[in-house]
Length: 357
Image (cartoon, rainbow, N blue to C red; front, side):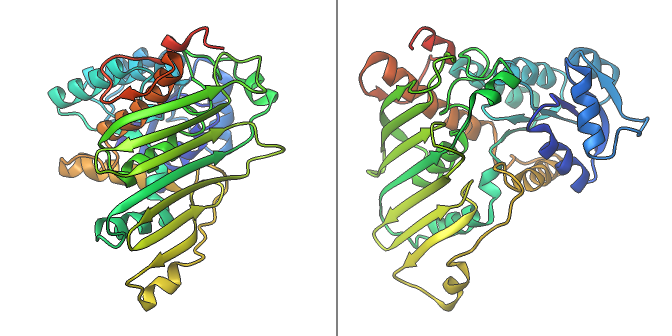
């Protein structure tokens, strides 16, 4: 399957690993900074592969090559623009999080992809973590019983050097703050586990230490789900001196699970009323990862490839991407308006937060 990657920055190495692991044909890479392409390819011993074309213009790359799948890993503010261009040219896409920066753009991606019959996957790869998959199986089989509440805690560190490396980070137009960038994977998992249908969100965000940014470095929220469950969100980049944890809790009538580690890759607590011998193997499970992005990209790519071949929806489709985005934007809107926000959102974008701090 002919593949190309647009955006060769920090996260791109996980996409290239997934390409190699899934035996995709890497036709081309694209980045506005040529050095980024060379560094990425060199890291994976592909820099001397003459068949891989280099582009600084993604439109030219798409026009000059017959591509079946494109990965989009640029700054977030242009995800939607690139995705829509690819879909218009009947190319399937994997879009790094967030899928877009506005509800309107997310809706456009969904509507156009459905009209064109193109597969779209939002890159929320943590859904493929072993621990997350075990939690999901328990949930779908009814082991939790009625859900009471849940929470996600993303307690990470991002210092000034991180933002200096890429000036688009922490801007409302191209990135958003801690919730949109660092916490959206955890927010995706929380909404997915607790029940996608949300009634109301009340959020508060602050810029505590990162005064050189436009966006927040701390966000907290209370989420009311239509099924009666309640959840809390805590996300920050203010933890000293380094990333501490990303933990997901789900509490039910008959079960309690806590996923921990740096990116919800471990099972810290696994208790159910109908416990079996198999549950003992799950307690204390740890999935070794090389970085906070985990191992899920390879599995997500494998799923998308199969979805294209068998003409089905990807496991993490465009609607899943919109759901995660919508919850972050709802927290932003709640902060801006100083009151709870009802879902679904019809109009809101990260740029509507301009001047908040």
